Length: 106
Image (cartoon, rainbow, N blue to C red):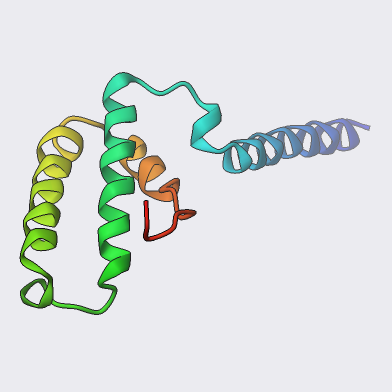
């Protein structure tokens, strides 16, 4: 009898933990309340991603001069205002939720 109760408790705890992990992984960052710093970093990451997609296999020397300057500026902002300030979890959430739906004319 005790082993059945213990098994039921273990199953209930395991189900609750798995449900919690599933809910967290399916919740996009836009539904989570972001701090002003995290919002700014999300915008920086989105802009950097747009530039990187224009030149997916290029070396920095192959970029147009204006794009290279912009990319270096964005990388500098990302390091100073995001990576050095935010915890790793916030950085990974921002990276995983970069806006990948845009057209090159934007």
